[in-house]
Every structure is written in structure tokens, then in C-alpha cells.
Length: 250
Image 1 (cartoon, rainbow, N blue to C red):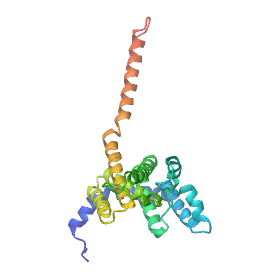
Image 2 (spheres, one colour):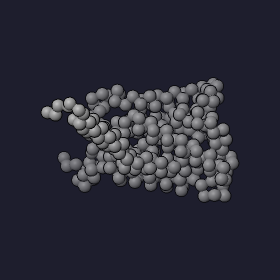
Image 3 (cartoon, one colour):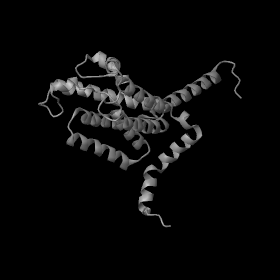
Image 4 (cartoon, helix red, strand yellow):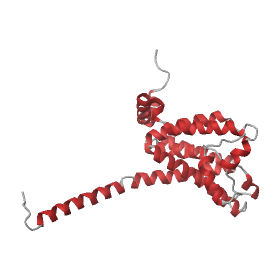
């Protein structure tokens, strides 16, 4: 039976995601869940916070340790930001967040590495948190300003990190159409739904693009510099040894 999928669609999909699919499946087949311990841990944390905050007294406990608001002192927000990434929204189904976190964090962990995944996730989440504070401070009369009541809105969840990691992975794998689609979706969301979450997603997107571009330009810069310094030091040491009095030159 002839496939119903046009050949050009298959070729486009392979060109866009073929390399990414190959890398991810190879790691998963070889190591299974051991290939993505960071993604597994992040998913379990989201699930844990979702369960706890719906228990009697749980919402107050989660608020004290992981809920960030622009009205809070900056040092308190900074201390809570690492956990705020895993605190899902109260009014949204948690299963969507769990699937997003496991898939996107898992792919990013394989493609970017655990350290880079954490750097991107927390940097972009922190950027959104700081943007909310700036927006409240400048007020609603400015283009990116917010009314004062936004300072009391819960600013938590993994969505900004998911957006940022998706863009970084797409850029690393040269999946330009995917990166463009994610960027377009975030801009459309911010235009149609001009709320705090939508604008924070755009901020996360911009920070992710800057991180990805920096990694492309400077990713191998310092390793090359250190390798050059090491080679120069070896040459200088060898030259000094040869020039030493009584040295035997082979």
C-alpha cells in the first residue's frame, strides 16, 4: 500500500528532525531512563509540587518555598526561583506540564548536556522573573509595563524554561523551521494574550537565542585558547631544556 504521506513532507521531516531523532533514540535505547536523570527528576518535582499544593495547608507551604511574585523583596525571589521552576500553575492541568518537561528537558539533556540544560532553564526563568519586576516598576503607561496588581500574581512554572530549551535545541540541531515556529508561536501568544506569562515567554525566547548564539560563536573559544597556551608552554619548556648548559640534544 502506498504511503499517504507525500515524499516532500517525509524529506522535509528528515531534514528537520532526522539528526535529532537519531541522537535521542540512540541514547534512550542504550541507557533508557538513565539517559535523562535531570528530566526525570524535574518531572517528578513538578508532580510532587502539584500534589502537595492541593493538599490541606500544602498551598501555603509551597508558596513559602517556591512561589515568586514581583511584590516580594528581590532577595526572596532569587532564593525561591530555583524551586519556582517546578511549581505548576494551580488552574492548569498538570499533565501537560509533566509531558512538556519530560520531553523537552530530556531532549535538551541529551543534545545540550545537563549543565547547559540547567544554565538555559534557570537563566531564562530568572530573566522572566526580573522582567516582571521591571514591568511593574515602570507601570502600565509603557509598552512593556504592567499595572500594580500584577505584582501579586504567582510567577511560577516551567513554561519559560521549556520554551527556551526548545529553541536552544532547535538551533543546535539546525532545525530552523522548528525554531522559527516556536518563536512565532510565542510572539503570537504575547500579542493575542498580552499577559505576564506571554511576555515572559518572549523574554525567555530572546535570552535563549542569545545563549545559543553565544555558544555557537564562543563555544570552543576558551578550549582553543587553553590548548594553545598549553602547546606554547610545552614548546617553551622544551626550548629551555635544550638551551640549558650541558644539555644533551638528541
